Amino acid sequence: MDHDTTALAQLADDVVALIAERGPATAPGATVEANVRASRSRHGLTRFANSFIHQHVGEDTRTVAFTVAVDGRTASTSTTRVDPASLREAVDTAIASAAEQPVDPHWPGATPPVEVTPRRAFDPATAEGDPARRAEGVRAFVDAAGDLAAAGYLDTEASWEAFASTAGHRAADASTRATVDGIHQTARSAGSAHETSSRLADLDAARSGARAADLARRSEDFVDVEPGAFEVVLAPEAVSTMLTFLAVYGLNAKAHLDGASFAEPGQAQFDPAVTLLDDPTDPRAVGLGFDAEGSPRGGVTLVEGGVTRALAHDRRTAGRTGAATTGGAIPGGEAIGAVPLSLRMPGGSTSPADLVAGVERGLLVTTFNYVRVLEPKSQLATGLTRNGTFLIEDGEVSQAVGNLRFTESFLDALGPGRVLGVGDDDRLADGEFGPGMVTCPSLRLARFTFTGGASG
Image (cartoon, rainbow, N blue to C red; front, side, top):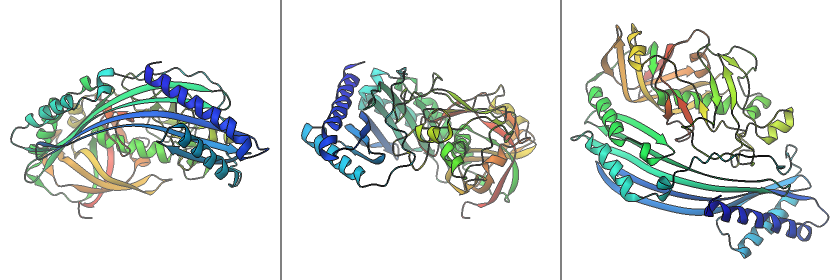
């Protein structure tokens, strides 16, 4: 372990020892157990608008978060005040609060010892969060277009975390992430681009800026099309949004237990071209080697060749079903359930250009915006296209079109017979819940329903 994770491991151990010491005094005669996370997050953010940097923000925060159980009654808290007196106060308050709660029927107990292999997706240069290096990336993004107005951000983040439980489990790891995300604008249009990696040096901001500028220029003269069902080619950002909603609301053991999920393990619910993995072993994945419960983030196949195979579990749902946790616990996730933290759809062998070439008449969609689920179990959702939507005619992109509203079931859109092609351009793509969670390619789909223009 490096100096930071070693210090955090000691801090987590100190809190566990404090809970063991204070438990008998605060809750006499009760069994007191706990899971503790000690973390440090260093985040550097550079924002730009009108092609100028207007904000540098730096934040370096240490946090202790823990869940205490008193005879099966639980309470959770977190604090950035990590001096001994403040931690003692937080521990006493949490134990007293837990003692007043009803019994938590799904509390799985403090995490027992289990082997965790650190992922070490950590880059020291990225962790430094040098504003000058971020500014260089912004300049490259802006200069890629020249006369267009650019806006967006470039950020770096380093995370160190240690976990300790009263049952004797210990884990520690560190990770980094860097993202460039921005748009170029004309008077009537915009184009966007996104890149994420565990290493700042992997980002090619000039390439992203050129892509965003190209989309903006090609979108400036657009026509409106009548809403209806179209064959579509969806770029990775649009696919990422679909997969996020399918995973969080459907391939989620808690949602399944609550009767709110579409998932039917063992059934061919998707097209045979669809395989979905929670895959922290992918070299492009970012994040730690363990989840919020200290469980190892092992790989799991959620959908294989169109067949739903498994669900994302934390220790709570694993305990209810007799399954094993998949390492998908998130902070405060008791109400949400487990989330695949490294969702991946493997790429295919078809270039995005060849996906388009196979379409007689349809739409090329770059990104979705403001997506909301209307009915979680069917995955019926609505949202808008954004930052580059184009008409495809006779296998070629022929004309930009105005933004459209869609109303479509993501489950049906990826259902049997609906996936006509899988791109070879799989990469970390932006999604509804932030960067670094989904790796996916472009897709060609047989049918996607658009129900109106951008105004409704």
